[in-house]
Length: 300
Image: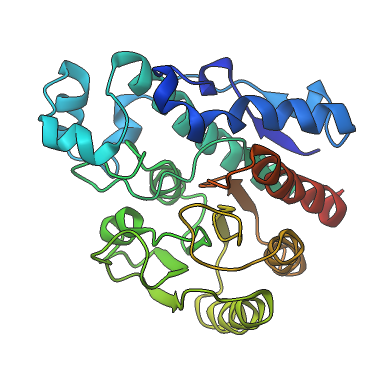
C-alpha cells in the first residue's frame, strides 16, 4: 500500500506575501484525491519530531536558537521565511513524516511525503526555505537504529543539496548524490559524495542520460540498502528559479528511472517533494502529481 505523509500543518503558517512556495502542499493532495490516484486510506498524519532525533544531525546550539527564538536577523533572512513557533512546529511534523515514511517503505517498498526534501538545512543553520533537514534526520535515524547501513540520498532538485552534503561529509553510511544547476543557488557548493553540475538550459535527453549513467555507477559501487529521493520539480523549463529546460514529460521520465532502479534492486525508497517555482501553479502540481502517478504504476 502506498503510504503518504500529509498533515494540515503542511499548509502555510505565513503572511500572504510569503505563501507562494507553499500553496502546493494544500493543492497537491486535493488533485491526487480528485483523480483517484490515491484515496484517504493512503494518507497518514505524522506526529511531532522529538528533540532526540533532531540532535542526530543538528547541533544543540542551533536547536536552542530555534526553540527560544534567538536567531539573528541575518540567520532568519537566510532561511527565507519570517520565523515563528508555528513554522518550527510545521517543520517538526514534516520531519517526523519522513521518518514515518522510512518505516512504511521498509514494509511496502516505497512511501512518500507531500512535503520535505529540506536539503539546504545545515547541521548548525537553516537556508533556502529549509530549517531542519528531514532526509538527513531520517537517514541517521535508520542507521543509528540498525535498520540499514548504506543509505543513498538521490537529490534531483535543481539546487544542490548543500546542507545534506555538509552533514554527511565524513559519513561512511550515508552517501549523497546531487544533480543540480552549476550556476544556480547556492553560490558556494558543498562537496557531495557525487555531484553532477548541469549547464543552464540542460534538456531532457542530456539530463536523463547523465542520470541513468550515474545511478548505474552509484548502485554498483555503493549497493545501497535504503534510498531517499528528493524529487524537486524546479528542473522544469517553466521554473522561475531553475535555469534548466526539462519538460514535464522529461521530469516524469526522471521519476520513472529512479523508481525502476529502486524497484528492480528491491531497495526501499522514501520520496520527498522538494522545490518547484513555475509561474503557473498548474505546472507545479502536474509535475509533482506525476511523481505519485509513476510511483503507483511501478509499485502497485
